[in-house]
Image (cartoon, rainbow, N blue to C red; front, top):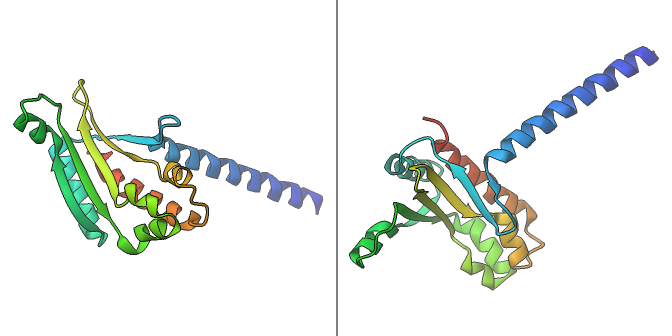
Length: 164
């Protein structure tokens, strides 16, 4: 009997270890670089394709797309050279307004802003503000499930550009 219990405990420990390793790997793909609340995910595809894929995924999920701002074009129109940079603004009002009802100042960070930018090496990045950081910034402590949902959604959206 004790041999069966020991075997079951060993299997449970192995399963928990595998789960921990999987979760660790999944969270390392998209994580805040430091305490500044910035999350970066490297794209495996060019900027224009990344924008198209993300917008298509947003639409497929039924999320409201608000705005696309070509920041490099705006800079060029002002006579300033800027590497490729496009800001996408989108959200799910029933979810996003949950944060604003908790603290009206959270409207500074909602709807979601996702920046697609190309660095000097030609690498494309999807960049956004970490939702846990936003919660701390606005001292929101009563919307944990909603922040977790927002995190899962943006990770799902940016996952569309991490593979060719």
